[in-house]
Image (cartoon, rainbow, N blue to C red; front, side):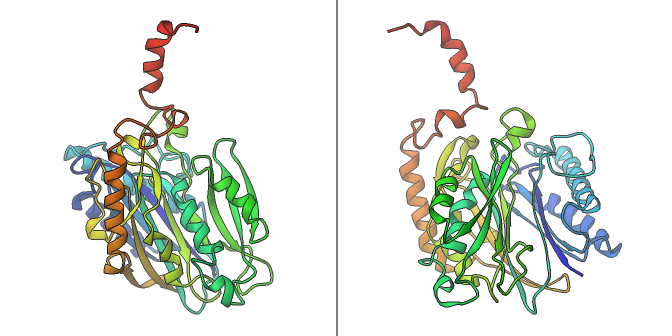
Length: 369
């Protein structure tokens, strides 16, 4: 029996503002998933948050896109939304863009990252949760983890990694996908994923002939774009990812290493600014300065027969203190730009803000030169 590892998240109300998730909402989710585990709907679960996003991490044997699992998550979010409304939390139900569940949570607002796989003797899974940024924010670290030998020594010295990996890349504008192999297509891959607002890594697979089955993903990222669903600006998409580690895959330290560099991502205040991604422990997973800076948390899990046998808050570690300090310095530098690019996003990414209304108001005042 294969194990399915599902992360489903949604912003159902912040307290205060867009900063973090109230314990009241975490309690609702915890209680609901405890009931689901007792009823054998799921095998195990972990409830947490990053910024103002409620995060449901579940293990089960029902495969990806299970209607039963997706409906469970939807009901958790609906119940939490009711509590958020009762308490006047900000943006209650913000990510629930439909009125009723319709068989699959995709396209309804919440973000999803799921993968079904055959468990190894030891199955470490690293979860990353981001707030105040977009799905393309994972392009840089996932490329580094699976394709950069300066990050992942195993690509050079481990025979099981040496042949490389297969990347599934989505064009979220044209709604198409392409599979690209590294290292042989590395430059072509970078040409695409460097444009992170359009081309995003969805999954990574082992190559044929390796230690792991080539049809089972070793990494998966949520790629839902909220504005494409809602037809208007509703905030950035706050992506999540799950990455399997060790035993024929990058080691735990190689999976974490890219986040020692606080690279720039899009999102931050009102989803309209570039800023540094700051790796933090769960205790600091709240967005404050200019509704940020964008945050990422990492939780490492050990899974055995679908049961979570242990977990660790991986960025709650002084080894990442310098990265946090550098992120604070970059935040200072970017903020000094105020409303000017490159702090503010370029025009094509401001389509769902008030900028088009400004252009409409001024259109008759523009003169030919």
